[in-house]
Amino acid sequence: MGLLCAAVLLAVLYFSTGSKNATFKLPPGPTPLPIIGNLHLVDIRRQDKSLMKLAEEYGPVFTLHFGFQKVVVLTGYEVVREALVNYTEEFVDRPSIPIFDQIQNGNGVFFSIGDLWRTTRRFTVSSMRNLGMGKQMMEGKVCEELHFLIEKIKSFKGEPFSLRSFSIAPINITFLMLFGDRFDYKDPTFLTLLRLIDEADRFQSPSL
Image (cartoon, rainbow, N blue to C red; front, side):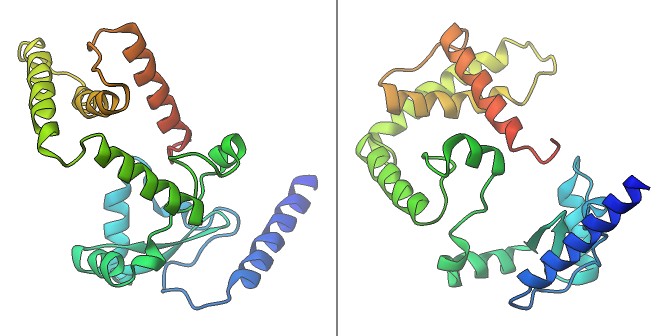
């Protein structure tokens, strides 16, 4: 009986919240179920295929409900290009990630949002350019790092290996720009930093 009452209460909360937030008309989409919305329609292992299948039925722009969160999905080159080029201000922002809101209170380079994120992004891009990003001096550094990556791939001697190895080189180039030196791929400090980056990625993974 208690579970039934809880389910009814959550359903009422869901529909009441949805009606209050419906201040503008959203694109069409599948009818959401109480509580879970449209989560049952998306395979977290192949989200791209799930979304493309839904686009065949509802068009290149459609609405999904992930729990209580409404999401507008854009599919296809033309639609995405129009959104990012013709409606830059509307699409320049990004949604907040609850776990990082709790940790950083909306601050930081990577997880801030709104005006703070725009200001931080401009400052970061300007600083990275001053450090050599986009300049010819960086081309040699990138080619040098590519040499180390090729040697890393050769060390597997044709055996299968994790594609994660391809992310090591770009990260090392970023560290080179920030710290003035690159890390050896076996450096314990470098491996610790990679592990921390992986853990941060898992925090925002949709599979959690």
